[in-house]
Image (cartoon, rainbow, N blue to C red; front, side, top):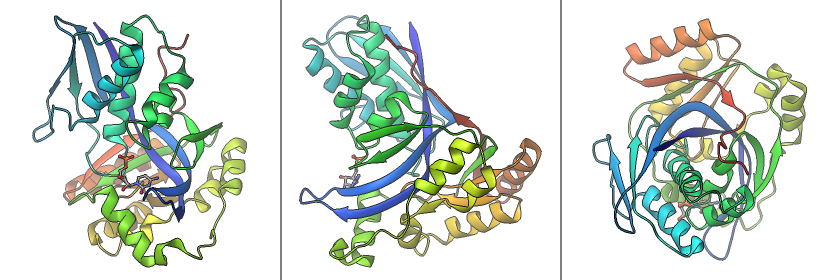
Length: 295
Ligand code: C5P
């Protein structure tokens, strides 16, 4: 039996810059994996298909789950399917902007690659990953990266800024397509969109380990589209700042919000307060490398 940890991602920077003819959107994003994670275990079984077992109520375990989609994508490129039972312990909130389903898919690609004797390099796994979802290629290796295109053009970056994150969520999720549709409405389908920001300053501050400068440069286009629709997310953002976060930002298309804290104690206290107010909150750290099957 082998296991893989599927780390969630947060977006330290996310600017949607245009709409493509295929309906997807171009974006510029600084992604960071964090220690909030699901766990997957893989066990060989009879037959030639992947079977998913999951402890979370309401989560599909058939072809609608990205784990099964990733397994089928892997088998197609590998040229053969084999029997595998995959058990998923879910901890990352779903439909929250934390890449939970995508992280599970990426962990599935890593796990099946190990089961098969590591036939594929990380680069090849990223290629397979793109067919499963836009965030999956980054999550194959995780760490810190500047991602462009729909997320598939990945330039690894360094984050020496340390600190502690509190990831919080309350209330309903928003579907990613609905959040993009709201952005299209706000930005007039991006016909004359000019980038408002640039991630360069943030990347420089992360490399230099200047957390306070980095915190001031966090940005997410989706805040404009989603915060007005999700007052609970707005309140969480305010509560994180009042609780001592150097900055707080929505992650992905929301509605999760993360705060960036200087130390563990302040972060723990802020998380406790949010939980006693009815939110879910997780104290976590940046994780620099998620790949356990390197060849
Ligand atoms: O690739 P993924 O399945 O995560 O994307 C879900 C949906 O989000 C897509 O069907 C698309 O509507 C939207 N999307 C987009 N541009 C991206 C990523 C996702 O429009 N870069």
